[in-house]
Length: 525
Ligand code: NAP
Image (cartoon, rainbow, N blue to C red; front, top):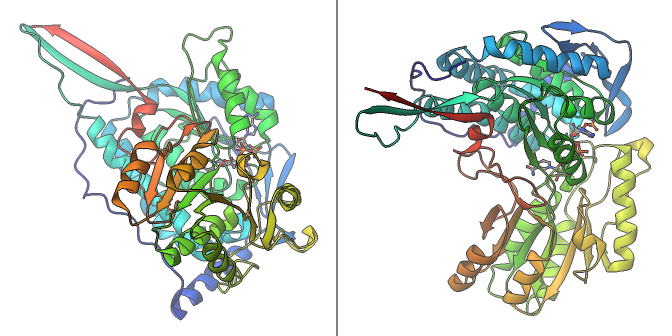
């Protein structure tokens, strides 16, 4: 099961995939044509993919368009506990064979995944518009990021295949090589349903592991499309499994199974902690400690200092708080503003929020689409009710009846205390809490007053305050004088501190190590 026999042929240097803004008439026409093509496929049913074969169970999960819940996007055969166990057992059985695939071949397949996604970009954008409620630019950013992950990890695997030589002891030939771990479970969220799923899956496969992918129940159609791409890219039929099904039914089976070697999870804090706990307990027949990589929630803050460019700060806060309806782990949900500019900031913020348009994202005039589901819609509106008591409602505060689509107006609640629930709890919707700080030091204390530590931003022109933020703002991804969303693969390795997760830094040079183990070999010469 060696991964490192030959050094793969070098690929061209990594560059990020360009993202389309869909501002030109020809781009919009192409987008509408892709949408029409995808609409013609709506409502199809999709099998599971387990142990190298398609399976139909007849127990269907229905995925709907969150802008129009009566529109069925796809119907998906759901795995039960027995099929989930079969998936991990077969991934384990096929691992010794797959792990012997030369690194060069795995790198080629990963790069081919990127190429196929690029060819199918507009079509995949359209699936994200319809199934995840993304606007066209947000959908294109998601698909572009998926391409970036594949391209980047292909190049990183080339480096891992030729590791740096350790110190050479006299009279010995010393080396250290990287081996894959085994059969792993990949559990992505719905909010970057292609990018995060593709990133975690391809990182595991390119390093020589076999996988069982359990997609989010909100976005199973995109997962089914991705499984098609893996097959078309040449990944062997038994190297990956698509195990659609409810997290509560198949999740525990996959996590607890003694043949599961690792779990790569991105999602909420509560589910991540549960997985971490279940995976820690060894089961009968298990001979390893399972490795868990869990990337979880955020309660991300932007500090607006009295020495900031206020217009640029307002733009950054609005983009970070309301892009994809605030449903990004990196979304700004707390604006912490120096008292000297607090009132002026609120006036400018309210004016800017009033310009945001909400409606079906397939119409490129809308800046915001729906939230993902009926239950998210309900939970966010409940948080808004809490927020109205905890602070002063400045903008928004309402939603449509869920039967008309899961839309919620961009909401600003001002004068929020740091002990308030809407300051502390992840809402995961278009709700921004604004809090007044006495000065920069106080703003920093407020920003760090959170169990999370994912992203954060500071707007200030003062170099000393920038230095303080670099030293003391306790987040995995810090941004200065720019928005706190929009991490780019390669430039901004992504992952958070504390309850935001294990800080695995997706899209960074260390990420593939999460899927590898190092072996040291010393030979007497
Ligand atoms: P979630 O509810 O935790 O679900 C994430 C995944 O876990 C889904 O595939 C879900 O499947 C599965 N799951 C649920 N229960 C499970 C169980 N008992 N065992 C195994 N798997 C289980 O999160 P989400 O609503 O999809 O995503 C939003 C959350 O993700 C937010 O908290 C956000 O901050 C976080 N997030 C973090 C990052 C990051 O990089 N830190 C990035 C993106 C999102 P079902 O759909 O079938 O329940």
